Length: 121
Figure 1 (tube, one colour):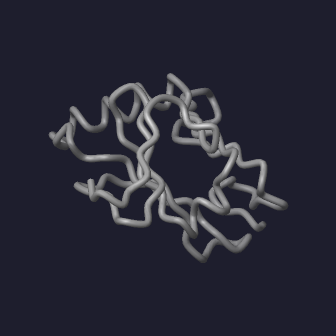
Figure 2 (figure 1 turned 45 degrees about the vertical axis):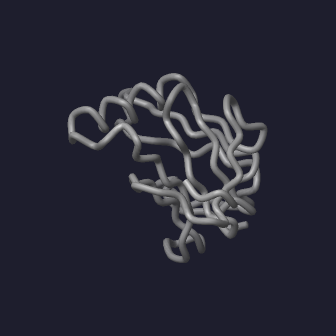
C-alpha cells in the first residue's frame, strides 16, 4: 500500500460488506490460494443494459488514488471514479432459491436491469 493511499480501518461509512459476503470472500480467497495480503477490488465499468456493471476481483496492491478500507482483515480497494457511484452501497451475498452470488445494494442506482448486474445512475 502506498503512502498516499487512504486507509480507514474497520467499517467504512461509505460502503458496507455484510458478514455473509465477507465469509464468501474469505472462502474464495482460501479456496483459490489468494495471498492474505491481497485485497478485494470493487469497481464499476461502462457496459450492461443499464449503463454500468459492477466488477469484483483480487489485487495485490492498491493504487495511490484508491479508497482503501478493511473489513475483518480483508482490505477493500475502490478507485475514485467507482467510489463516486458506490458510496453508500452494501455488498451482500445470497445463496437462496433464486440463485447465488454477490449482490450490490446501491442507493445511487436510478435504474437496474432485470438480472441486477448493471445499473444506471
